[in-house]
Length: 270
Image 1 (cartoon, rainbow, N blue to C red):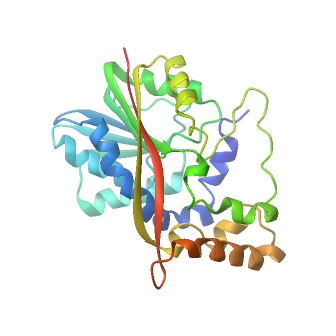
Image 2 (image 1 turned 30 degrees about the vertical axis):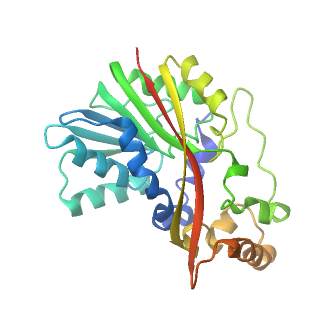
């Protein structure tokens, strides 16, 4: 059975990936929190898990300096290509990107001093296996720092409730697999237990909240609604429902002020 089959399809769908730079306008607000938890030092080697378009990797590359190095890994070939082009455009030489599944694949360049992730670790269908694989890439004493969302009820910006009646339910996970998605690591106690089961120690979780101002299409657009399973005949109704729901966050024109509730986990490879 192919690992992470659902997410592999999602993150290699051209319409989903094309919208990603819009989504980054929301998620990049969290980068400073991830890097603060990672406490990167000059000369360190960093693995960025689920690196997406590479913004966090590029920030980490600046933090570790020319003597350090950053390797970004993501299941999306299109996003790693975007990340590579961004690094080339910025003239950043101490970062590279690989299209890999960090649940099972090995990445060259280790052992790493630190593994980081900004909303990139919630999409593993065997999360304990994935975190054990990430830990295997770290040197003894190596650090892990990642951001994931707090529970959906703490994140009112998530529009799923507005279109629940228009979207088919997700298929149940295959035997031995876990549900994936943005809120799969939302329970701090369960995620702490998961990290310990994968062999990490000194697990800590810090909750955070902040508000970000973004354009309306940073959260959802018609192409994303279609990808989520809204039928063609229901697209107009879904778009209206989402626009009405998001109006509570409007701050003028096409801008939204979104309250984000996320958490940053830290752990150590013994």
